Image (cartoon, rainbow, N blue to C red):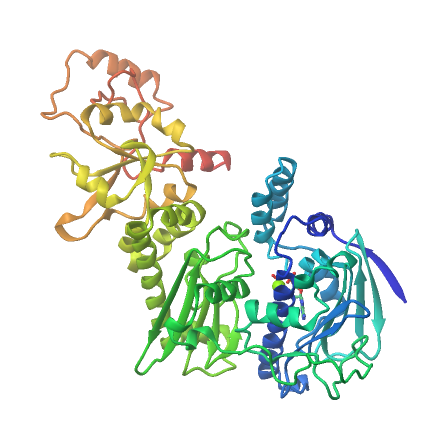
Length: 570
Ligand code: ADP
Ligand code: MG
């Protein structure tokens, strides 16, 4: 029985964009399908470690590519984890990622204004691997069966709004995807994906590091159902029972032998991003705890970075074998934008997430990783200011969350951070530069928090500071409101400078605390009149042109938080 099902609305819109794609490099569809096949093989191997009753043969896991010039198809087959019917409906028929609606809205805008670069960039943020096959196909077929279950499904779609699903009794375990190539690409020799030499070139370029064997038109008996594979054409030169990829883990190869291009492709595979990484980091640990790490900073914030369900992007391997993705034991939440791989030598392959949290070796690697990432970010500012600015714009807010949760690295995070200040209307400043500019007599780092630069800059609280030549940090991210209440100072030892809000407490800016006289009656009257609203009315030297301003108590709640509490009825 065949059912016709509609793609979810967001998925449909994205598919439309893909089909009428502006994406110039269509070859990448193959990279995406191979990446998915590789993930599926990783997952199957892990599941078979954890579930001894799964009952699948994992001795010959591989990816197979079959070209059929007559039928004009390319088929990508893996004997990995596969999908159930429900998996297909949710994983292929919908996009469940946080931030989808927002990114789609931006995409529509970009398309309307015809800015192709932006469109391509935004498309990249979805990591829309599977749908990219519609850049080259009129029609895509998929047969899949979930490991450890009976009965598979056949999925088929032209990408126009709906897809068809049917049950198949005898599907082999794993997934087979047949791409029916668009006729118009046939004349293009370089991009004829039914030509084995084209396929070989693309695999070499994009998927060489994939650790599973990728076979191209292998001869001999296979238990996969592949259309057009029956004709025994002995004259086909491009068949291979040897893998066409070299399968070497990049992090295990000498640094000098890995090109930037290869790092970029690997980054795309682990991050599901379509762009190049901003920065690549490699480091190793030796001695008792041997490990290798290959990590990346992204050039743009992952779509879900500021959503609750954002994943951490570091995968754990043990001796070249994939163990788990999104390994939260290895990276703190505030560094969730870091992508890559840690390969540890002395762990059990079936280690659980819970055990990892307690593992001493993992804790040490995590410490090292955090230090290294923070150093890299700080270093970037000196080496390549443009890259640093990109990083900060995209991921800075996430990094600052570390000020709330990582006491051990507070100073390093402050060092890696940048802040808007009254010193420069456009450029951000480091705290070190702020301190270097502090005039004689200024003891604290002054800041003001609020919703936007414009609103805090015009705050009456700032006037006296300006008049005195004191710089004020303008903190306008939500997270700022919270960390300023938790981090007492910047710097260490005698050089530590406390943070002080210009809106709280009795900031005394007068040199000899000389207060004008004759205001006692006015103050007394105001105190009585305003008794219900304020706790005290006092003379201030902090204002120059405004007659009065409201200040919070030292240790009291910052105004925005107070407002929040009030609106919640507290
Ligand atoms: P992503 O890989 O970024 O999750 P894709 O569009 O490439 O996005 O794939 C969507 C999902 O479909 C995958 O996360 C995976 O769960 C499932 N999937 C795709 N291809 C396969 C496959 N060959 N085997 C098993 N599951 C697959
Ligand atoms: Mg994918």
